[in-house]
Length: 336
Image (cartoon, rainbow, N blue to C red):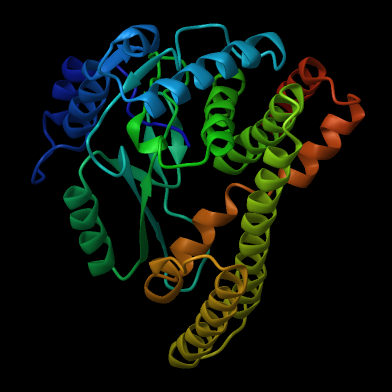
């Protein structure tokens, strides 16, 4: 996930506020949020060395540090200070992203920012602010979804830390996410979230497989594959429902009937997802029953839409990541 908050921080945000007659200022909250993350960051080596650091936290940070070395030497990811520090945020998520789409469309509304370009979401460091934005967009008749984000990339503008919000994951998911976010520093195309997230997802999956294999922990790799495959099944179910809705929205029927059929498809998807979670022994997330709409479906598709194509591109490089990065850059240029 990309952060749209990088920039000249408070000075730039203050300039952006001039003339904006709104309750509060988006850029100012973004700047303050990024500053808080930076101020809370401490070098991992220092935290590990402190005698009062909890043993499990020290173990996991050492593991992250080893994986960071691996990402440079074996995956060709950027050699910089990203993920060499740790920030305890004392909350569940670092950012809450807001997605919006029209009632009868899966095209996400976009917002444009100086660094990230135009993206299909808007991020808030305050959950309350995100929900206020949701209410405002819903008043405009839009489908809106809010999702908590545990990690993001500033595209190398800042030294991204490992966040406490990432620590509730399994070790391999934690490391895979770090690979994903670092991939955004390798290649990022302004205005093309599907390209960026699908590219980073392939780097993440290849990276974690090679990392686990290098440690000869076959059981850990199998558990990672099981979680990954389940996530893929869920996303596939969502994507299929999205295709059904796209067909519906292209038909010429009265809005009331289209609304009825839309709700019927969302109810079908909700029931299907509940069965998937229950049969796997996993807890069904709230969004499955409470927040299924166009915005939720479109936001979930961002991460997988172009993954098959990127896997094929990697295959043409016989798995060589440097070749893959180069060809992905060429593809980005041709797409542009």
